[in-house]
Image (cartoon, rainbow, N blue to C red; front, side, top):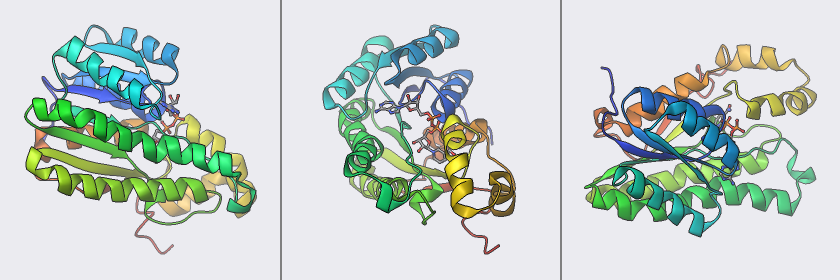
Length: 254
Ligand SMILES: NC(=O)c1ccc[n+]([C@@H]2O[C@H](COP(=O)([O-])OP(=O)(O)OC[C@H]3O[C@@H](n4cnc5c(N)ncnc54)[C@H](O)[C@@H]3O)[C@@H](O)[C@H]2O)c1
């Protein structure tokens, strides 16, 4: 089955780098039009101009409700509506809970949880206008279990999984599907930042941990393929689920 996003109009947050960028590139390759948004406005602009006329950029902090309105309006203005929201923007903290400041914890929760919450609220009216649609929330295997140094991050991604389930039920009658994607370690700048603290915490080279737990690092393109499938009509009956991409990490005992 080859999924296609021909004619779909999407909004992807945190799209200037990593998974969001790879997702925007694949969406364009599959025929979608994409509003690429990021708090890094220059990065979003650079990506949109590289992607061509079917992409527009918006400088957008996902924690600010008014900026969500602007981002959704950009999809209406540029493409006439919205069919897909990808709540991808997120940050990490790689510290023990006892060393994590309240301000750091709350900032992370605001970006990783309040961001998707505001995104759902802002996008739903536009998705309803389009007769339905798909919301894909970027969670993580960290939303399904614990890992050292990732207290705030695991708490936030667990919340994203639960938010996804409730949104799926509440929005089913409106023809809006809501799914979460749960990747293990993927080769992006976020993981580069976690390598040193993680090695210090577990006492093993990061590469060894990755090899033992998930076989290898995942790629941004592999995550983008999952997001594209969930955004497409091929995933018509899939909603409320946490789609795991982890080389067996979650299920493996060793
Ligand atoms: N890389 C991984 O291994 C991995 C695994 C599982 C889940 N994830 C999740 O995937 C998503 C993307 O991760 P990534 O690895 O590409 O990270 P990244 O750090 O490479 O990119 C994140 C992007 O989000 C943007 N961003 C940060 N704060 C923002 C805000 N307040 N508003 C809008 N944009 C903001 C950044 O500017 C950046 O462009 C995150 O939600 C992350 O938690 C990543």
